[in-house]
Image 1 (tube, helix red, strand yellow):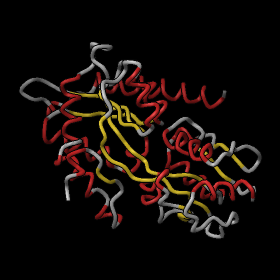
Image 2: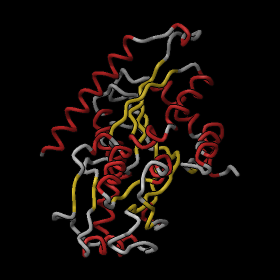
Image 3: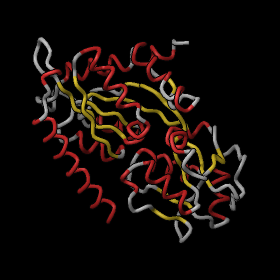
Image 4: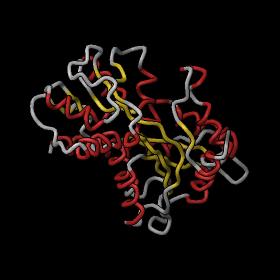
Length: 291
């Protein structure tokens, strides 16, 4: 299929780029008493677009001296990249794919980090008349019955997988002229949401992406707070028993820090100053105990 070819090409280019950067860029200021340390993170795009990945990497480096470099892709593509053995840790949000990644021996263990939620976004005039619906299945049936334009990322990302889970739960196989796959969906949530806004359509999108873009777009949150729309994000160290090149000790320090009270406080407060509300909520054991 076309999207698979494009996604494979994109992943290859990204992988070559990040490896080249990692091998050629080692600033002296980032040396420590045990030598230069760097780990590679393959991350789903949403947290990168929101800005929280950069903040976490920066604060972790200040704390430990370990540099974290990241590459972003949809969750499916992210896990495929990590299966090459060229990354040390992944940050993703599709539980079934994560569990398979671990079961297949590519990852060691899933660690809960944070969550937000998805919402059904659409135009203010709401031709499908879904605004205020409490049940996402009912809302999606209205979108289909009204043949209102719905745009999907269609790239096997965590966002796309969640969307397809919601259609399946509603007993619907979306198809027809009203259902469109955005051909550049693999570029991420932000470009997709901007395109949906231009087309005046509906889509399923995570709240963090909406919050960061809401001043630039006309789309509105029409259906939200259905429990099935929660969006859990985890980290998984790549398995050193499978790939001897993996920097497991440094990767585990990152995992331990991001799930600690210190890392969780950064997640808790991220976005409040700029957007007036948090973009993510705490989900590690230490984070759940914070007030």
